[in-house]
Length: 510
Image (cartoon, rainbow, N blue to C red; front, side, top):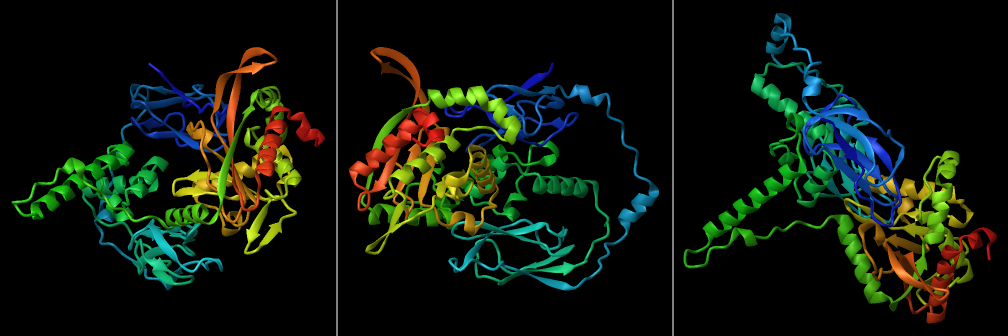
């Protein structure tokens, strides 16, 4: 019996989503909890996994399609539906066996140094985050070899030639500088097939599959628990073809924690109480990005006179516009019409009317900016980042949506550049996609203010003497009181509210 594959329940502030990437195709066999498809919203990417073993019988919505929460996007049949079409594989020929039994042959090539990329002027050093290959492994030209993590972005180092990784000079966690040699590659070196037992071949196939097809949830779990590539290879996968699942990683971490706790208890004196493994601890070093975020947040709290003012906005007018023109907008511009473009447009207009909010403090001077660069807070597996949408006053709603989507995808994939992370006069953050009803966002120095969006919640409201149920959103504006007074901060937030509740004013500039 076919099982429906559905879009997850979307946050209340997200009206619809897009099918980003299918990781399977019709006819593919899948295992329970296998990652099937990515569903992309305005701010986050949701993973849809298989609820049971089976075969993908039909994909109803292709990549790029707009979908709603709980909408059926594919169907999963039983494993028996594919078994009848499978043909038994023929036994390997004597010639193939003879070839496998031959000793391994290698063709030596020129040794090429693997170096850290040139770091931006504002970055003194970096950290080796993850090696994706190990010595002796064959690599292809332009294959990602290692991730180099700076304070703000992750740089990928790719192979310049086909060959084999000869040596790793700097291991994961090492601090490196620009153009430092971190490994060597034997250019043009290749390995011929070597004899291997069935068990070795099976294990190798399992390892290769696991290394090349880790799902985002598995990679996130490995990163959060500080598990290196070498250590991850030792974890036994229970997914299809031995692939790792998130549950495999969690079980490995739990077992490892228990072993460590037991070892610590054994080392203690018998007179001391034995430590309870259920109350054990794990110490993991902060990533460079997390340390940088912590430093900036602490600096913002200590070096600014930060206050927060609140208001609420009726989202019904914008929701009606999106409902009426969503299809026509997407057909013409090739992108969905979301909420963020309206907020960026409203904020930009408010910044024009309140230049103090668009300014910054430099020593004893106030710097007024005559341009409008808006930072958009994006949640990534490595932490919160704020890439910049430049010249927002010169962009149409479609261009704003395209720019926001591009920054969100780059942030998710770790592709943001230093230029895209530098600057910005004002920040918008949307905690509503995670269900936050109200919060006090922290200023992003050297900016003067930040706007926090929140969850859209239906509430009874008094309208012209009558009670109506309206979709309301709380807005929070945190600002530096050294530069912005209460009058300007409240006026700014009221302007944003009025422009959103009457979107026609955005078009008429009134």
